[in-house]
Length: 375
Image (tube, rainbow, N blue to C red):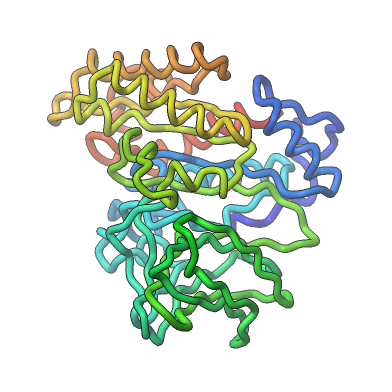
């Protein structure tokens, strides 16, 4: 798959570069952020919250591998946006999700990431699932390879009084030292450095272990919309509203500061039998949290196959209806209907297995989101 961070030089017919008043229907905060970006201001931020479908399982021949991240619909969305004339980048990592279960580990799913000696995917979860951890005394590093020249990296790191100090390096030189030994939180640090083709490397320096969710690589003189894939394989809505630690996903959402959050969390809840009333209350809590920084667009999942042990269509339909009810109650844009998108029932030709779309299905989702978020 070609690189995802290159904006189109000119807009395709109906593209956005020639539009002086970008205004996606029912998404005022997102639209205003894009207009600010087009005027030379900060980059617009689109955060994708979801499960293994969003993370990309099934978008590659082996499920998670090889390089299923590149086939996930948020990455495809970034390409579609760029192709329609909105410079867009997907050069970010927002947690390991559940992809450390891939054969060969997380880097087999996302080869942009390298885990050196002493680094691993930890059981603790933060924004977008499991966290990356560097053990105290580790000699290796967590490295991210951007898709083009960059001179900035927004690092998302966990802070806690028992943790340590880390460094951020490019081209063999330390560009910043970040002390994570402070009150518990998820903290964003923007690191500047001379333009480089990467990688950007995070290392343990002293003290206790260090934990990172990842970050975003960007180039200060080139403004691109950011599509951030926080897909978390296996997650339900309840996982996203846990508040026992401030670095969990719920606490971290304002750190990502999205102008638009796309939430697609239905499949694991309907297949786990989550009560509809419980689901509605939990989704409402998540929507309220996401709405503190921008717009929210809900989406329902593609139908699972009841003949392969998944939830009945009635159960799936009840969760789907709950999403539409929450959207109406919260005054949100009409959700993207995954059932309608996939023909109303399990669509074998678009699916990798009983619950996950294949590459063609992922592409269909990406186009549906593109159509709702652009003009």
